[in-house]
Picture 1 (tube, helix red, strand yellow):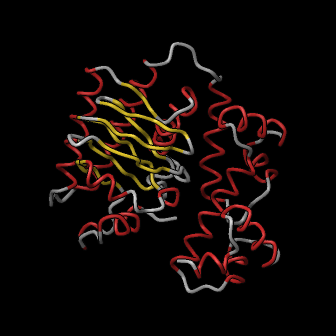
Picture 2: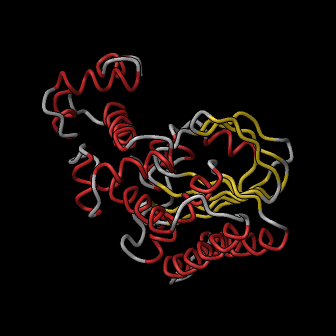
Length: 293
C-alpha cells in the first residue's frame, strides 16, 4: 500500500524535499481538490484520514454505501476502504488530517488512531460522526493549528505535529463517545477487533490464515471469527483478502515484478493459485490487469 508521501504524490504531485519523511499532513480542502484526489485508488492508501466538513456538503460512496456529509460532520478513512467521491457542493470546504498507518506504532497514539478511525464504523456502521457546534469548533481549531505547523519551517515541526495529533485523537474520541447512548459491543470485544485490524495490517503478506491471528490474540479461531463478523459484517478472510488484492494491484501497477514474483512475494504457494485469487477479487487475471493499465 502507498504510504503518505507516496499517496500524496499520486494525488497532487511530489512533496517538497523537506517534507518527504513527514508522517502527518493537515490541509484545507475544497471541492476541486477533493474530486482531484479521488483519482487515487484510495483503498490502497495506508493512512488514517479524518476530514471535518467546514462548509457545504459532500456526497460519496464508501465501501458500497452511499453517504452524505454536511457541516460539522467528520468522516474517517481507514486503509483498505473503497471511497468514491460523487459530488461536492460549490461552496464545499473541509480540513483533512492524514497520518501514516504506522505512526508511533505500538504507542498510545497508534492505539487511539485506530480507535478513533474505527469508532463510528463499530458503533454506527458508517464512517461518520456528527459533532455539535462546540466540539466541531474545538477540533477545527486543533486542525488549523496543525495545518499551520505543517506549512512552517519550525525546527520541531514533526514533534509538534505528533503531539497535536495525539491531542486531536483524544478529543475526537471524547466527542464520538458523546454521540453514543448505548455501545453495541463490550470493551473487550472492541479491543480484540482493533488488535486484529492492527495485526492484519502488518502480517497479511506472510500470514493468510485465521489461526495465526487467533494465536497472536490469544483467542480461539471461532471467537475471533464471530467478533470480526459481528462488528464489520465481513469475515477474517475477507479482511486479509482485500489487503492482499490491494497490495497485488499496487505491485502490478508500479513494479517490474513478473506475476510469479508477485505471487511468491505475497506468499501464495503457486502462481496459478494467485492468478485465480486475483481474478476472483478483481474480475480479471493479473496479466490482463497489467495489460489494461
